[in-house]
Each structure stands twice: as C-alpha cells, then as structure tokens.
Image 1 (cartoon, rainbow, N blue to C red):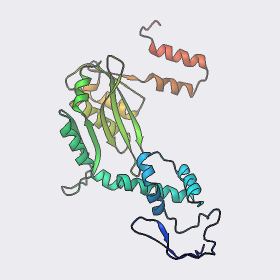
Image 2: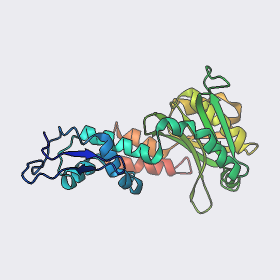
Image 3: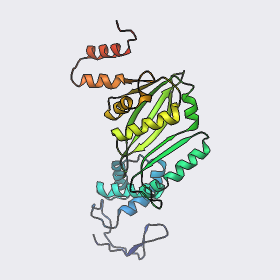
Image 4: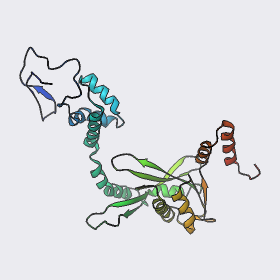
Length: 277
C-alpha cells in the first residue's frame, strides 16, 4: 500500500513519524492487510518487549489480537511468532549466548552454595579452546545435606526442554518428614538414553548418596533407568531397591483395560504393604 503522507522510521525510538502534513489523504483505512512491509518482526519485537518482560507466557494469538486492536493491522501469525522470539532475545539475549554463559552461571551457583557439586561430560571432539558439553550434572550442597536427613527414598524422572536447543532435564527428588518434596539433583542431557541415565545414576550415587545404604529408587519403566539399576553393583539389592511408580503402572494398565473399578483395584493393590492383601 502506497503512503501519501511522507514519513520515516526514527532510530531514536523506533516509531514512524510523519515528516510532512497532507490534509487530504487515505493512508490508513479501517484495517491494514498483513502484507504491510513496514510492520516487520523487528518492529513487533520492539513494540511488545515490555509486555514480554512482564509476562514471558504472552501468547502469539494474544499478540495478534493486540496488534489488530492497537495498530489496526491484520498481521500474520508467522510474523508475530518471529517478533515474539526476537522480543525474548531482546530481554534474555540469544540461545547461543545463554548456553555459552552456562559454565559461568553454574560456577557462580556452586560458589554461593557451599558443598555443591557439578560434573561435566564433554563431547569427544571437544578441545581445550572449544568444549562442547554432552551432559551436565549438579546438586546443591543444602539439598545434599537435606537428603541425608530424609527417608532413603528417591524418585527420578525426566522432562523435555523447550527452546531452540532440545534436550532433556533429568531430576531426582526425595520427601521429608512433612511429606514435602525436596529436589536433590538435576542434569541436562541430549536424550533420555541408557547412556545418559547410567551417567546420571552413577553421579548421584557417588556425589549424593555416598555411603548411605540401602536406597529405594522409584521411577517409570525406562530402559535407561532399568539398565543402571541392574548393571551397577551399588544399585542392586541389598544396597538399593528399584520400584516402579504406581501412577505410571496404573496409566499403562488403563491403556489396555478400561473401567473405574479396575483402576481403583490397581491403586489399592499397589499401596498394599502385605502380600496377602
């Protein structure tokens, strides 16, 4: 769309300013189309950057509605998606720079939390000048101390990492006497594989449980966890006991068999402490 009013974008504030007034014009109708080349993703980013600072969960569809209402422009979802990503980078910097700062960040955490542990596993092609981490494991000193005051039971699980670089977050938690959850250890890995879980469980035993025996480990039925619990002597009975999460067991059962009664029986059976029950 051709603009009759002469205007330009000012670098000082990033807004468009009319440089010459034309009394009769038709620059703006009720709604401009999404083909407006002036409204780039960078302009959108600068427009919503403060909203992103206040609410990182600001959704793309809500931004589209906001631009349509305030700027009177019908903008495409894709352009707003890129604008939102650029706004996040304006606030938190890029994914590359954040990952590059990870060693300094973790090191600062370790220095401010006495007794904390961090272990890195780098890719085989890493050099002294350029190291690429494959796994990183850390546990805060206060959490390690708390674990030794809690019941000898841990739950291990994983979840997906969201962002430009995919990966998995492995965690281990315990429960105190007030039945409150205490996170103990974390690890960032590329995938939840036999290799990554074995490495995680090895670090956990060496740096956290240490000489505390026995330990009960609760998990879902992942081959990597099962492998670690059966191939390391210190994770085998009577030094350790492996049990499966009842919620996951019941969920797997209900994929093959339906019914509320069966669902309740499965839970009652899993909670029973005596074989006869």
